Image (cartoon, rainbow, N blue to C red; front, side):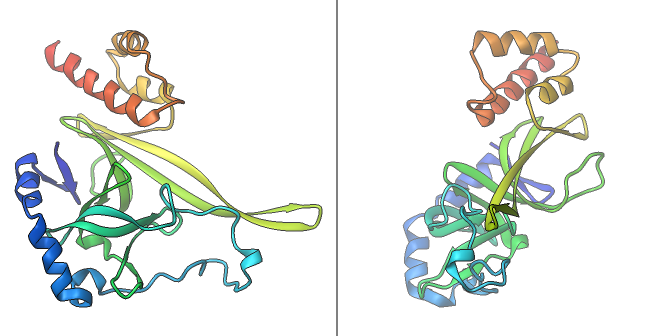
Length: 238
């Protein structure tokens, strides 16, 4: 797999070489403790977006990927691999947060993040360029990377619900996908949008989806990655 490093690429061979740093990186963290470059930066203020202190006025849900609790993750930061960094990813503020040894919530400097493997997904920090349709700067999930590339952008917006004079705060989520092919970024949100980008092989892709019983609603990530991979295969052999 190729990984984005901003607008650049990190080859599979390079990733393999970096990931060969295993136990030594853990030992390094134990030695440097809070002096690690990971723990320099601003601290995240929980629920700071509400400007409220009363817990009853906090949102009914959270804005993090999978869980607000920290999870062990593989992190490449400034070209150094940390195999057991404690991370969580906030969709609302587009922040990757690391837990320091003294239990501080440190927001990682995005420009220094090469990639992170969190909850089975590859998170990259993407830097926008001048190519048509290019998405904005920010964190994205890299769903597929070959001649074509697919980025997933998830966001969380805090909204207010008023029911019978009761005020609730809740996060609502949205997802956009970006398919890069032939020098252009194409945005789509659903199966129809993806297939429309796959001309002139739309019919072939429909047959592939049907024969493999792929379902966008049940598993959009798998649907997209497998479909794009098949599109590459067909388009390269025609």
